[in-house]
Length: 249
Image: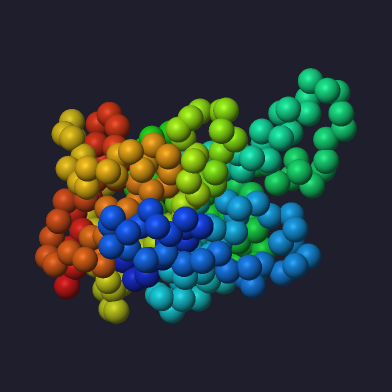
């Protein structure tokens, strides 16, 4: 039998907060103080928004982050840095070791571990349009197997405009602390599943997800803060729709 999974904290960081108005959600500004100046110069927007959201969710959950396993889900990861390096290759120029270090998909997860002095397990996931759904499924699975608490962070920065428009026109990050413990929880969720049904949610949401892939988490964020009782929550917008049932007290 599956263990019940609870959400103890959630947070949003979005440099363009007006996009949240249609969903009655409130985001956080990027918190520059979370990253020391010596490291801040090296970090990208994607790292800064992800760490801000992660910190906000952990604070709400009052969680000890030094022992907290995490899942970092991002479609593009460090796409700006990766793109800049790729454009240097035809020029036969030397690549910056720092930029190369910052181009890998788990860069943000690495900075989070360094900043929090956390040596717990970390997973980095990319799954195209199903990235948030697969991140949530991974966190749910870890909690079923052995973890008591897991941090899930879903994020993407603005992409170079010529890569895959309209993807990456808006930077967005959200974070959730999930737990097998019910006390002080905001909501519970069921195992993520898939059905060949339309994503029944706000009519403007699919368009937003096209521009901000990480905004696939908005229905779950809204269900936690606004719903009463049990609601079916879509986790993606294309193809077979992943969903979970979210129940608030």
